[in-house]
Image (cartoon, rainbow, N blue to C red; front, side):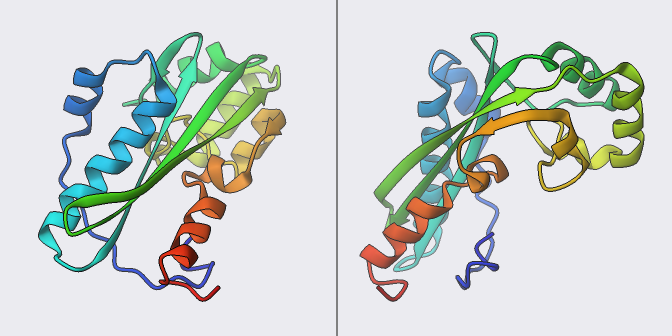
Length: 181
């Protein structure tokens, strides 16, 4: 996303223990959890990279009043998608910008996702075509791929669905002088 937007960056693994943060924070407020995960990632790298501007991001999925994590297997993905079909869930994409071990800015954006009532035959074909890569997505789909066929409607920003509130990130990068105004 950043590359396509013309933003130069270096990807660095934060080493943040996401399950521990989720466990300590709880699942009552998925939008805030997305921001907290993004902040933790940005801070961890910022402390290792003095004077660097560090962007952290993360996404949470809220469904039926709870927080959904990535499916560990294709069978788990199948069961999750069966439960979500014909229903609405929310994706919350958080981002945080840090420098010198301090969070300078953070934001979250939410997309409301309405899945269509697809057949088991379509679901099987979808999972066979997409395979294990769907396990990398919290929703077990990629909207930019065949996963787009799972939906009737998406209310919200496309980039938020992909995992980052890109418009607000770009605005902040312009505000702090990283990008031209």
